[in-house]
Length: 138
Ligand SMILES: [Zn+2]
Image 1: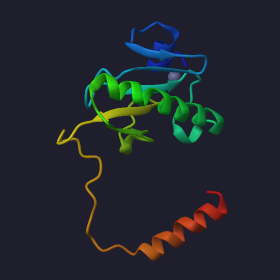
Image 2: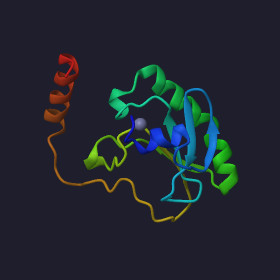
Image 3: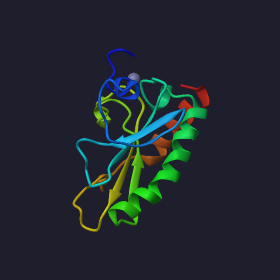
Image 4: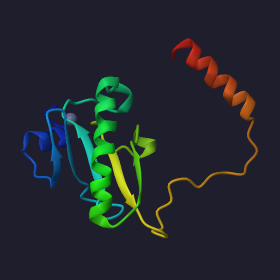
């Protein structure tokens, strides 16, 4: 897409600090890293988000995450990382082109992904709603 910043990076119209490139994906350093070595893995084909990405391509992205993560961890001296995608604005997705964050983690780095809640919830009702939605294909 012509107005997509990641498509422009893939086309070479915008510079990025690439650490890997193959026929289907590129990986480059996030310019606003959570931690050193924070890498984005991006398929070259434009898809707006995870749900719109063909599952075969998702598998390619996952495999590349497995390939690159040991090298990234070695480079930054870490043994832990998060590998995730933000899907939708409320989840923090800023660029509407599928990408996965590979974020090296360090003890006490202060980065909190899940706060959790002790609030009472009706888990049984929630599970029923989700199972029904899965069953209906929605
Ligand atoms: Zn794009």
